[in-house]
Length: 303
Image 1 (cartoon, rainbow, N blue to C red):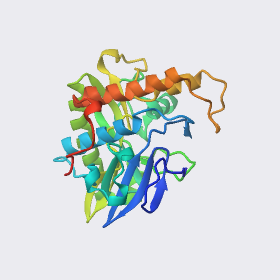
Image 2: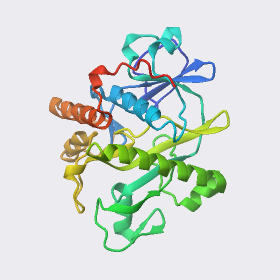
Image 3: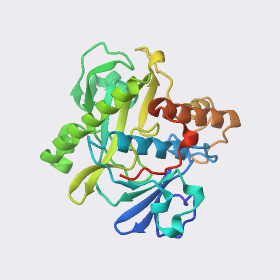
Image 4: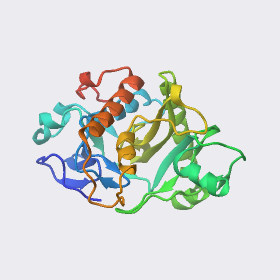
């Protein structure tokens, strides 16, 4: 899905997805700008969610820094003054990052700590998760005995990612690299989940993107954000139920109550649904980081 960029910059435009716009910043770098666009059921809504892009950028920057000893990221800087001069506009401050161009892996690096989402549906169907047999009698949202690496394909535009087994990941990227990716993904998840749990939030699962920069495997794109992860309030987690999440849940809940076929064009979102989603994103960021979103400017975050 290619969309027009949310902000016009005097840089070569490379790509626009559901949320991010990517520009060539020269010197082997990209400039990634995170918009307030929001999608549900793979359809981009007509209205943006205020501050959503700033939350995603602030959260990724926090994790890239906090977990940098576990794995290097592609982040160069989130400081506007480090961007190409033509891109130093206040509209993108706090929602942009300069990154090294990476040779991205053709798989999604998903780690699941709890049985939910597509993994729960597969378990109900045949008792497995990504081709691996699970114990009988598990409930939705149960914590798994250990976090599990469950990769998926990267779908072409307009298509859905497909869950694959670890063996299929080996066939795609090779055994040695697959093992490194699995180890790093689980290590990152465990460290992030432990930090979040201390702040009353469960990270049920997450998706990492990885690639190579100068021959080194790095984590890229976004990291442990509400768009790439499921964040649950620990106080509301009960196996057998679906806990509320710090993301676009108000949008999904509203749309599920409509007679809409989940194809474009999307219905208009009421102001209260937009506000509720914006608040969810912001609360998740502030609880996990211990920082106020109002203080986030993207300054002094160069690594």
